[in-house]
Amino acid sequence: MALSRVRLELLLRVAERHEDEAQRAVARAQAKLAEQQMMLSELRRYLDDYEGQRPARVTPAMLENQRQFNARLGEAVKSQEGLVEAEAARVEQVRQSWLDSRRQLRIAQHMHEQGCLAERAVAERNSQKEMDEFAAVRHFIAGNAS
Image 1 (tube, rainbow, N blue to C red):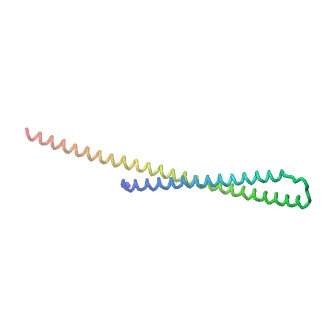
Image 2 (cartoon, rainbow, N blue to C red):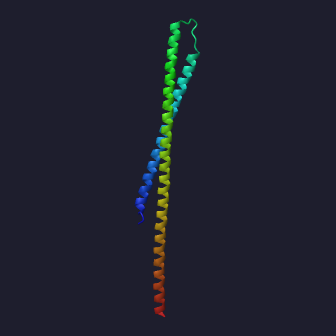
Image 3 (tube, rainbow, N blue to C red):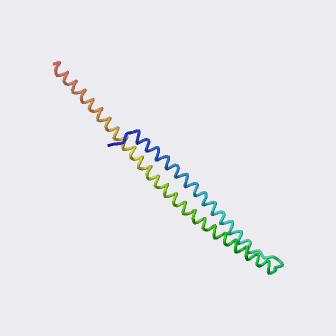
């Protein structure tokens, strides 16, 4: 049984809304990934800058403090790298969801178009049937008038 025009339009609107929401989710995930990547870049730059600094008067305590600080910065970089990897995986997951919703939208659009075509074909058949009946009545009347 064919879906009614109203149901097809509703299905199409829901699919469009879902695809729009998925597209916005991709944009949000990509923005968060960019933010995480920027933070990683800043941490790396800070680590590089700090590792390059050598005070004029170096004491063993200062060297130990610098070594510990560099170790903590290295841990922070590794942690941030993990966050970037996790966010990249999330972006891919959200992107796949968006592609699925796009596919569903195309299916809904196709079903809507097919429904409209079928409705038009029924209307044309009905119109043709009415014209044929009218022509038959006219022919019958013209035949009886002679």
